[in-house]
Length: 139
Image 1 (cartoon, rainbow, N blue to C red):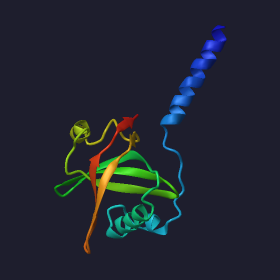
Image 2 (cartoon, rainbow, N blue to C red):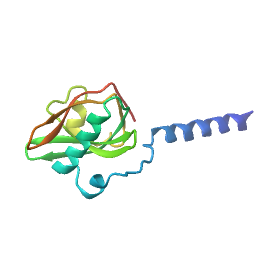
Image 3 (cartoon, rainbow, N blue to C red):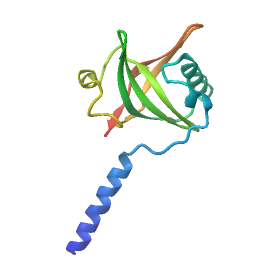
């Protein structure tokens, strides 16, 4: 009986670690391979894909924090519906994630953000992805 309990605990731990990892994804878009997520070419391509597949379901994992000039960004891996890219999310406010601002993302990298919401703002000069909210974080 003791061995069965140890085996069940082992399976549970393995399952939890497997569950928390970001699944592998393969990028088939040359723009995402050849340009930085900060480049306008990359952002315009990402915008076009997101707008053309408005009903698609995507998953988001925190990748990085950067401050470029006076603007702070959280970078997310975005995956789903044949998309494998990085989303540079402009942080105009930090509602629900004030601790991430203080820690500059540390401690939450690779955490999954469920139902991440953002606005896409685009004009002839630039494309911006602006944070709105999210439902919950899974570490």
